[in-house]
Image (cartoon, rainbow, N blue to C red; front, side):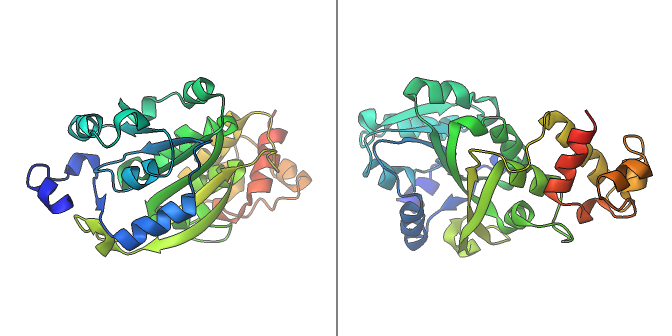
Length: 265
């Protein structure tokens, strides 16, 4: 199916498209997601439908969001899907997931094979809708997965790590070799599950402040926080919170950044 289609449609570099073709991997992903007909299932970037078709065989209906008009038209015209599929041809960064959840009255289960160029901004976009999302299963390049799960004192730990772990419990489920895609990417990928907390363990009063503090700290990550965050906090205030002002951005835990955000009020 895929080789025949490639003659008419070659993956577009500007969209960062790499189509999943390994059937063993596809079957494992379907098993991991375990979609049920009673659930509101949303796929981001269905591409050629490698995951879309087998999931539609298991459930009554699902929604897909596809930026590429050629691919979305192809899905809309596929008789196999008929009324099982709602296709939105749009940029997922402009998608209102609150509205999608309101339509069904259910929490959303979101999944997709995400290109590298939108992975980080999309995560920050989705975190705004954490209250209407049950879980998210995404395939990222391994570099992104390493950043999502990294803990303090690790080189991969950064602002994405903190904001993702603030909102979600995160687990890595499956590594996917580059040979599973066409065209073959230069790096391996992995499936990760992000499950938003029902009760956020390190709750802050204003997430915007947490976002600003972490952005400031990691923009100058090699500086000590007494310098990078010096315009926000004094050395004494750091000490009052039990945080060593001589530490650097990557040495501060999620709970400690949450303390800083709440202290700033």
